[in-house]
Amino acid sequence: MENIELKRFWEKVKEELIGSLPESVHPWIYSLEVSGYDKGVLTVVTGQSIAKTWLSKNHSEQINGILSVITNIPDSRMNIIYDEASAVKLKKEVEKLQKKEAEMQQKELAMENLSYMQSSSNLNLKYKFENFVVGKSNKFAHDASLAVAKNPAEKYNPLFIYGSAGLGKTHLMQAIGHYILFNNSKLKVKYTKTDDYINDYISYSRKSNNTVENMSKFYKKYNNIDIILIDDIQVIESKIKSMERLQHTFDTLYNKGKQIVITSDRLPKEIPNLTKALCSRFEMGLMVELTPPELETRVGIMEKLAADSGIEYEKSALTYIAKHFTDNVRELEGAFTKVSAYAEISGEKLTLDLVKSVLKCDESKKSVDYVSITDVTAHYFGINVADIKGTARGQKVSEARQMAIYLCRELLGNSFNDIAEFFNKKYTTIMYAHDKVKKEIATNSNYLNAVREIKQALKVL
Ligand code: ADP
Ligand code: MG
Image 1 (spheres, rainbow, N blue to C red):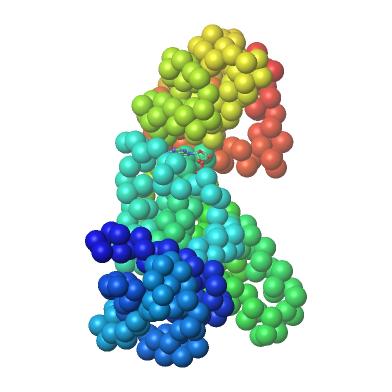
Image 2: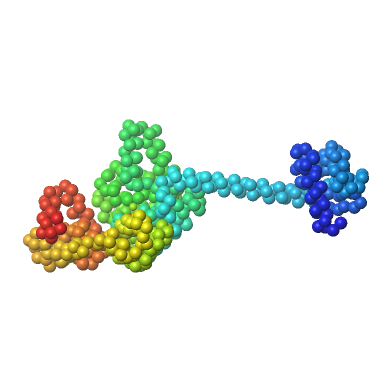
């Protein structure tokens, strides 16, 4: 018989045997391999000696009968041979299969673990490196974050990411978490807002009545972590007890060789009343700044959003949005969401005209500008306009300058960088001034009145 003919013949025999013999012997039939056929004698080989023994002893009559019918030769028979080499081959195959199964099981376990870790780590799935558009303004921060994600606790510890609101601090920080979970799901990642950390600490302290047992639950929660991501650390300002606790968490994790990532809207030394001990800890790793993205990056972010949403658009429409929202990616995204919702509802493409009409970038707002704000503010405080932009440090001049800075930000919505350029001051000075006036307004009626009167004079009230 030709090889191919032999194979076909064997398949037919096998099919008949499977159809007739009890299921318990099927695995042994599958273990048989055809070797030859000659004048009614079919020779098969098995690597399992039990298959030979069992089939010959208990089923030979039935097997030979089936064979005789197929070959049409009376007294046909099947000759089963046990073969050592086949046995070895079989053993290897079984081992290979078992290994594969074990690997699959481990993978499944890892995936389960990953989704568990993702849910318990508090991470938002949107905030991954893949979704972060890199440009000049954020490249250093991005690269440092990626380096930390690839080698936690080896490179930069702690990593301190700072920059004003809406520039991607939370996004980058969580991207580190996702990357680590995805590539090494054995590591425990915890993301926590500083507010939540503080509240947790307070509520455990209350519950505990200072019993060691209850507080130890708190320690466990924050000390058994491989990567801790602490967002918006600036809110810890002046909360001395929480700072002491945080210092403890920091030291415990740091000494165990764990990775710490912190974000803040300002530098450590600009956080009011931050203890020296914490300040120096935050500064001892790497500090990276996020600055407002330049136009090209903003357009890139718009294009990514548009591509993700699948909306049809004119490029000029995206560029228009990107040009009008210069220093906060969250606002930029908000504008895109608004115009794309309009486009979707009205069934239109995202065109430049549509964007212009939806955003109605208020031209009247433009009648207020740096010059009018500084003029009116100087007049209100009774000082020279030149002093507002100068370096004089008298109390009145400082107050007027800070007020003008605050109003420029609030009324023009320009970036801190832009305002810094106009006032010829450092970016951080501008941020500090803005923050200070904002806080004063909340508690000091003199400030509130000043803002109201200057706005009235500018006719924006
Ligand atoms: P922050 O924590 O600095 O206030 P977020 O990380 O919350 O800012 O970012 C605000 C929004 O802008 C988020 O939706 C974030 O995904 C998005 N975003 C910020 N920077 C980028 C970027 N470079 N690429 C894509 N999206 C970004
Ligand atoms: Mg944030």
